[in-house]
Length: 462
Ligand code: BG6
Image 1 (cartoon, rainbow, N blue to C red):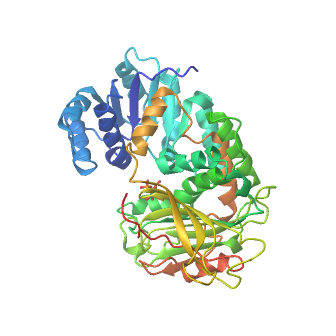
Image 2: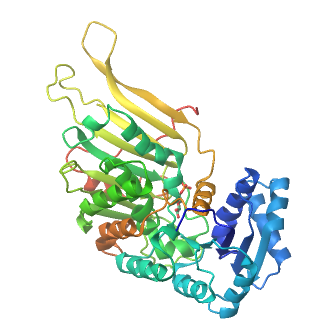
């Protein structure tokens, strides 16, 4: 398929939560920025008419990001609505008619994965899949076997380069900057190696709970919701070998290689936690064993990373909302100064959210007669937040056929292979108090003297 621009945007699940919170705001922003001028067709089985659908769009924008009168008027004029059952051929016949002369529609499956098969088949049978592209949401499957089955289903009707698997973390400015900073600077590569790196940790902390998404969360839990995708994607960007070029396939080939070198997780190196009162959330079972927190220790069995511990921690109801990567370097091989100092040594710190921050930890001498040092931090980059939301960026890229910021089928399967052994209740879930850093057991997976770095938003805003 050539990378020509799609000429219609179709979204299934048009009256659902994802459309309400993310898709309408992204569509309005694209129109406002002059990036979207095509028919927009919502499909759902609510029995609504077009006016009700437009009201839903208006309501979504009022609650999520704000209504822009001009852009909304254009959006409302481009909206079409098809009410129908996803199992019914008549729904796809209506869609085919609504597509009119469009030859390269983009279909967004903003629906539960259990419906992917029927919708994919309906699109194929009706001719709506011909030369089309498809976007699918994360989590892509529930485990390795279901992700493989899902890939097979999609590949019956769409070529790999027409399938866009969303991981919105990849479209964050700070996440793109990880590989830019890594590969555009000469001073990084020599130390980016087991000889110099002591440990790597990634913490994705969220101060809020499940925010009314109890029923969804019960199906996933923290490991499926953010570890298998967002956290492992960040880890691959930090650890992959240098790609041949900056193109999507060169980068995704290297991601695949390092994912294949990650050792599948074992229960002894995983801690699962659940915040107190999670059971009181709507849609949550009273005896739920689903984790709202996970801490894991990972290993990469290759020349660059053998023996370096990698830690991932993600959770809800933690003391702060912040995602940070901390790469600690080993102490100098011969301690000329600070021989018995237990102070902070060299490190790289990347904040991925809520703002973009890259710092380098160093030691400098404290003024005075003795050769005593103190920790200091060099701020390489500090930027408020993304100008474009990840969803606006991703929808625009998919319409252009640019898959760089989407996950390729083989890398998604390789990431499931890493987490597959610890899914379900392979590790018992431990309770933790809201506003703490998870169950105390999270410390037990640390190797040697390693300690969790708890992100804090102490810096002033840029
Ligand atoms: C989503 C998860 O993929 O990412 C949510 O389903 C999580 O549970 C969210 O809160 C975090 O993303 P962001 O961009 O809001 O930090």
